[in-house]
Length: 254
Ligand code: GLP
Image 1 (cartoon, helix red, strand yellow):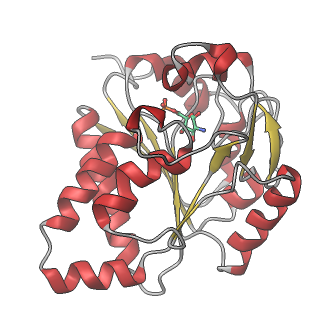
Image 2 (image 1 turned 90 degrees about the horizontal axis):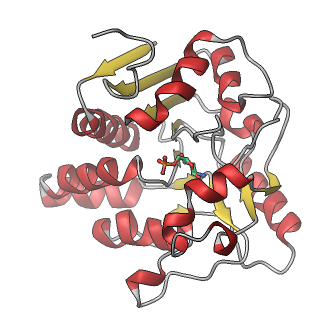
């Protein structure tokens, strides 16, 4: 289903409440987490919700927490003490969730982007997700070119966890964290594939802002195809698309 909400704040509130409920659910499947600007207000809201809980509930949540991020750049160090160097997704997660919620590094899992053999690391990571029972609730953002995780087009539904080359469009989209220079933005990443994403019990695709209006309209209106990797989500039995008014501006008239 599609859940249209007013703005990014309402979307963040909804997403944070879903994540909190998923951590408390029985059985507690691992969470699937994403990075990107869309997730920043959502994680901030989650931190606020958790801090408002009684201490015992906070401790219970910390004990239960296990999450796997979708992806990580190849070759980007971090976290470091200097926040401005927080370019890896590991550093992003440390700053947004791990430190504020006092979670440990083995509870907030990401691929190791500095592994000597990235392909072997991708295989290890995919196996680790499977060994944990697969993902329960998978949180997803949407790339401007229709990627989910770093599954760049063209990408079929049979792609599993692997090393990928990042497209010029994605390197431009994410250059902000690298001094605005697409050439300084990593050329490769490790990402969970559509295989692991589609194996999640539930999927929450979060889309905000007018810049996503065109790609969201394609996703909601076009049949599934490799040209739009996110379109394979249409075949999943339990996907919710949560979007704000700006992101829906190309499909819903005011
Ligand atoms: C990034 C990540 C995705 C993210 C997407 C959208 O490159 N690999 O997991 O969801 O692109 O990013 P943003 O929220 O910054 O628009």
